[in-house]
Image (tube, rainbow, N blue to C red; front, side):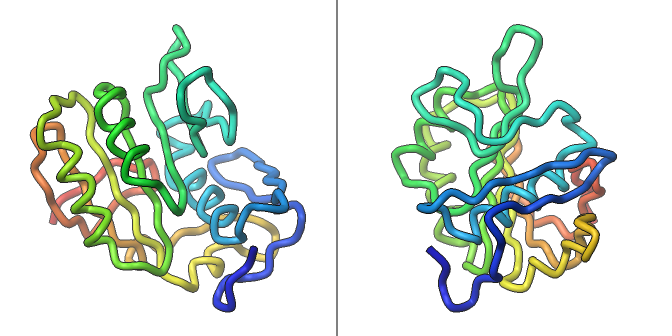
Length: 182
């Protein structure tokens, strides 16, 4: 269901990033925002995780929006795009301590979600970071007419929670997803 400020996305969205083509089919119950965020997160992390998989059940309690697996089939990268409930967020933080978790939002303040992440981290030990990405409402403009995605990193807000629960606001992230402090 589309809200008034979401772009119209056809039944299928074909995008290109990192030398790969991705075709996203929009399901009836899925918002345009959710499809757009999956495309943007794909573009953001495809260089770092070239085997990214979109919307695949991997036999866990929850199904990731995007995931990359190690040779044993365990997730090394897990992304949630759009709405993520408090219980699901806490479950992922607790049960995937060695997995880079990414929560992507569009057009909303990140402060409430950052608070949920901080609360989930309170009694948890993690070896991998958590990244919270905030895309602006007009993020659809990052998809060029030919489907190529070119994200303007200056237009994305990033909150990174290091394994030590150290929170930093970052201003620059290279296209491989590796953060650089300023």
